Length: 329
Ligand code: ATP
Ligand code: FE2
Image (cartoon, rainbow, N blue to C red):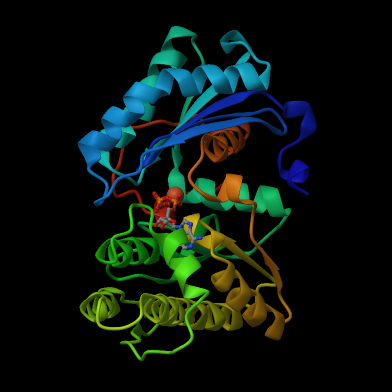
């Protein structure tokens, strides 16, 4: 299906750089995924922006080289260069932007600044072969329920404070887990049996996670970790599914797409799938390699923008919202 919106005869090679938060990723798109290489920064505490950017700088050369080798392309074969222009952490964004700009200028190629959130959506649509899904984008820093209408993704509901993944990470830190804690919380939650009541806070169509995070952190150590992880997840995911269900009923879309790092959580997938089924909508989640931050999704969006005549790049924008982007591809 995606070949309908990306005509084969226009196929070219796009090199994409991801560096918004913790992952330095380099991907190559040429009508398919030719390479998707990455290195991820992990830490005991939260992400320290300067340290994360230093990590990226130290790994960038190797990641670019491996990506090109795996793709079978030489740098001179590349037709356009894309980078994640935002949102994200300033020092990290500058790593990918600087690399992409240097390569584009040196080899005289078009440079394209991609919105990281839209890239998560584009790659999800591409991987799952969808046309017009209701998108649940849930990652570390972002939690949004969106749908495309008149060339813009409209946000039907979103977090009013922190992202759902960040809530999991901050909670996990309290239990001594290193970043990213999401997968570790998921593992413990599977063994939880006792449901502990926590604050459940849906405000209209929006979500608030700081209250439940504080409550869960306060309980840490006084109850079984497994029960607490289980209950924390059930509340968070229940809140998100409730908002998504209402957006689905409102938009009457026929496809639900779950993207972003937290979409790797099997329990969230199970809950979303069940809800979509009740509304006779299809449910899709892309494979892990495309769902966590990666360079390929930036290359794909860059190529789509290029084909739509949108060779645009500006300064990095740490707060670039998904509903600010005109989507004409
Ligand atoms: P964005 O800039 O889009 O917010 P990000 O920087 O948060 O992206 P992603 O790779 O999209 O990066 O998501 C990372 C988040 O996903 C982390 O918070 C991590 O804990 C969470 N995560 C990863 N795997 C799981 C899982 N199995 N269950 C729950 N959360 C997970
Ligand atoms: Fe992301």
